[in-house]
Amino acid sequence: MLPSLSQVIAEKKAGQPPTHSQGSTAHGTPMGMPKIETRNLNFFYGERQALFDISIQVPQRNVTALIGPSGCGKSTFLRTLNRMNDIVDGARIEGSVQLDGTDIYRPNIDVVSLRKRVGMVFQKSNPFPKSVFDNVAFGPRIAGLTDRKKLGEIVESCLKRAALWEEVSHRLKDSALALSGGQQQRLCIARALATDPEVLLMDEPASALDPASTARVEDLIFELRRNYTIVIVTHNMQQAARVSEYTAFFFQGKLIEMDRTDQLFTKPKQKETEDYITGRFG
View: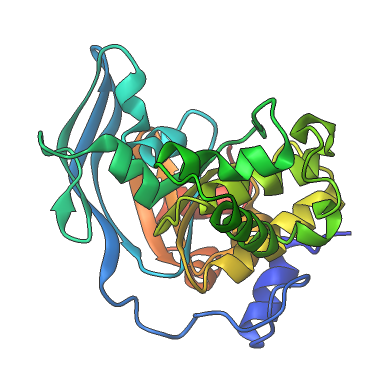
């Protein structure tokens, strides 16, 4: 049984790691230079505005959780960070999104290269109808790598980082669609890692999983944050408290508040944040 929000916060205040994770958190350390920064970001679906004047800094090698009620704009915001919204007809932005100080919406930006640097894992696991091996090797092959030995090394390394190698090492030629839901989602994470990204965007990656699979994915996120900048959208406040160092609360397309996770959940500065956390709405 997963702990309550108050239990998770109490454990973090006591300096303990998340309930089913190992290691220490980055709480108490300064944010440092941001990996991603948005400035006065407005986003429109045609004439409808979905995001309003979002200015936010995402710190390097930490987990930042985006929370808020359904339809508040958190997933839309997540997709602006690697230009996934470009595929939506009529979508447009104002303001800037910077990755290591470079505006990713500049006209000369190579979007394919951007998405190698900023990988994405979706809410519903979406393995390709290929073998386990071919799923992970897909990105490197697209990039031109043909050496079977090097591909094998990448596949093994990524599956190990995704905490899946021991479960599938004897099934690499099997269809990925034969894996369980939790395994498929970890495979999608391994596939995202295969392009050697710097940032991982996760849109409710555990919402369709059972509690045991959710715990494995959360443990994985906790481990990956040592080497990657992770931004995760979650509707589950307990999950945000367990895996993240920073949390941003969105409401009606606006960023209401962002702070260290413990601080935001125990001493929110804005009434809307407090009302959401205490269950008065959402």
